Amino acid sequence: MAETPQMEADMKFSQIDSVASYLSELDLLKYSLTNFVAHLDHLGSGGVYIRTRFETFIENLRDNPNSYACLLISRWIEALTWPSDMHTGTNEADAKLCLQTALTWAAGAGRERSADILLALRADANSCDGDSIYPLENAARLGRLSTARILLDRDADFMRKDVSGMTPLSLAARGGHEDVVRILLDRGADVETKDFFGRTPLLSAADAGHEAVVRILLDKGADIKTNNSSQTPLSSAVRGGYEDVVQVLLDRGAEIEMKDIRGWTPLSSAAAGGHEGVVRPPRVAIRLSCGFFSTGLLMLR
Image 1 (cartoon, rainbow, N blue to C red):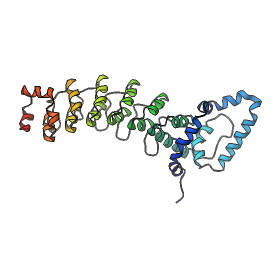
Image 2 (tube, helix red, strand yellow):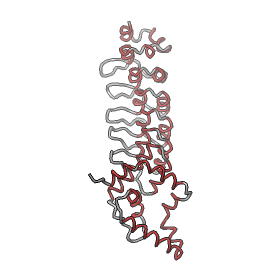
Image 3 (cartoon, one colour):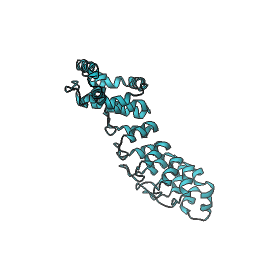
């Protein structure tokens, strides 16, 4: 079966970083890509040679419009105001998909040089790749602070949701990526946004046992009583056996008697799951001695 332009691009993924890294060693490359036409106009008659060479370059690209090189740079060329015949012959949808796939990969790999070059070549910070994954989504999920910052500086939408309804903040919280969580919050991400299953970033962080992220979100005003009908941050942390997270939530005022959809309290869940260390940290043990949690105590016996 013949290879499609995108198949060729996918196979050459490994080349993106090395090429972009080499190009970015030229200090003014990104600037030049952005201001190419303006500088040619400034050169006046002195730019005739460069213009002629560039026209020849475009003609050569037209000979192989589905090549990886043409896919990567055709959107940049066709966005120029000069020359008048700017079409490379590349299918616009293929070119866009190639760029977006490359940018999403670079974002998830933390390759800031590659991301800078691809954005200068007209990749879109808010468009997805062939798998409906957005660049910032990928950076947040994998904890890539450097590329997350680049994308945010290019107005990437930090409230855009993935296929499961999770925003970049929820993805970073679930992954325990503290620095990415902080930058998203600093840029204005909603700490109470919910995915399609009703989970907030705090609930996702507690469910994964990320104490530091739980603290960050609580410091930003996250609702400690949030729930998605079946669990709260405390019940999730208890069920997972995350003692440090449980203690943080208790210290911040989490209600240990709040019941989930099954009618279980966090203490009941801990006992049923055999997480005695979670049920009996020192401060919780003091509360137990007051007789507030008779259901849990019965289960422990």
